[in-house]
Length: 303
Image 1 (cartoon, helix red, strand yellow):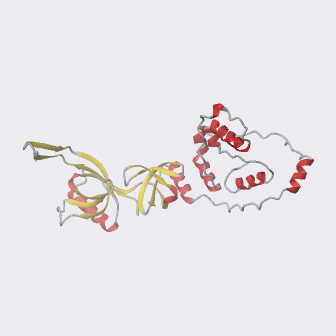
Image 2 (spheres, helix red, strand yellow):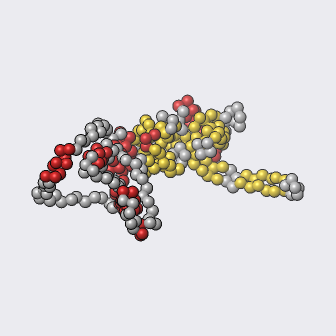
Image 3 (cartoon, helix red, strand yellow):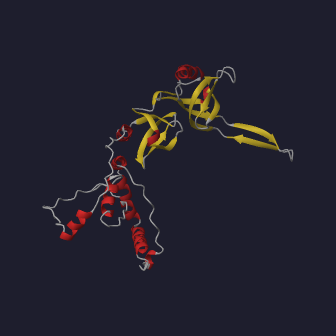
């Protein structure tokens, strides 16, 4: 028997119309907190029969956390993600052997009389089954085939290496922020599977001021995102302590980092044509980089 929104509500109503009290637990609640489920049942009994003696061993048991009722679409998504297998900590579900024959329960005369007097609610109409969103199929295909994904997220375009789907989120390595990030799958748009995250790659010693300028002359009019390996030079600054008059040496070590940049300009009017002025997605602000300190360039495959 499957369990999800609408169908469960219809079943609940049928039981209630016949005088039953319905207590429904999700499998994860029973698995993770069985004593909390027992306490919940005891609380219900106590609310009906005030003289009910509350089991002392349940008084300090943590109450169960509520679980929001899920739709059939979400249940299908969980099936693909192996959500149940994850919290049950099992590799897969086995198959139950079909027993020969069926045990048919014959209702009693009294039950038939009660059933004749029951007036059922009109069943809630279950919406038409929605096919799984194409984006889930694309994501799972990319993970399975070791591919990449480009998409828009909250209006910004990005490209990632998908790692896994968990709780309706995509965990992926983002080549814009150069870090592992989580993305709400419902907020992904224009999702496309890619064979690689870049279209062209240039590595030293084939790079230099002139080559970087040639690449940027292609990048700028096409609004291409550039991922680059950049080495910040070591420098020393001499400061004077205003209180003591002593000299203080402020030294910054050289640092190599991976930066993804966009909105690039060759800074001929500022620092000179040996520099590029651009938006740095790591620092989330405009930065200036010296061309001869760029040792690697990748043109990201996002439009």
